[in-house]
Image 1 (cartoon, rainbow, N blue to C red):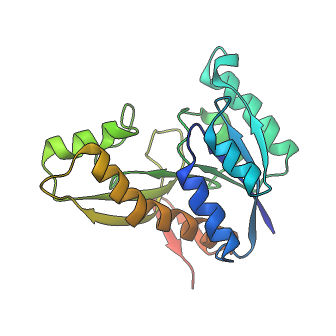
Image 2 (cartoon, rainbow, N blue to C red; image 1 turned 120 degrees about the vertical axis):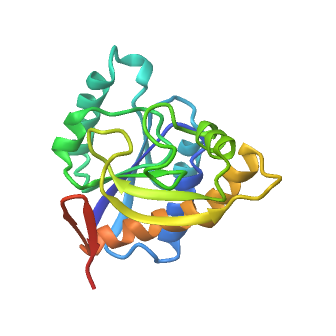
Length: 208
């Protein structure tokens, strides 16, 4: 059984999607054993508590750099014997130490079709504001492995979502969550936990 840590910073809607999938038996071979928040008082920690999952706080404000926080995180993950790290709305850009400790074992979900509207500065509503300003007809979500390049790791899964004429950043954000993020992320985690993902250069191959 692979032990999963979910890293959060806020409300934890993607965490909830993972918890719900786990309850339905849709993550065979894996179990969420830790939720780690970069902020004290994050609602995601309440979601973890309700689900009987251990919650931890590693406040970003306690560290003088992202690298210092990353080193502390890696130590915590190792102590917890974690096999897969899932970034689910975690607002910290971790440094190379995390990737080195968990090669092809750190996942992130991004609310756009990478390589569009991604990289530094593209997070939360900023992503959807940019998509609407550009006038795209399709947006969506991407689950990818994390590398040192922000939003630049090998893509595991993508799903497109139609952009409507009267969309606001908020309505588009909600639709992408409901139609793409909350479905893609549990499926990607399940594939990892069943050893069905193989990374070949930039390409992620799903084994039968």
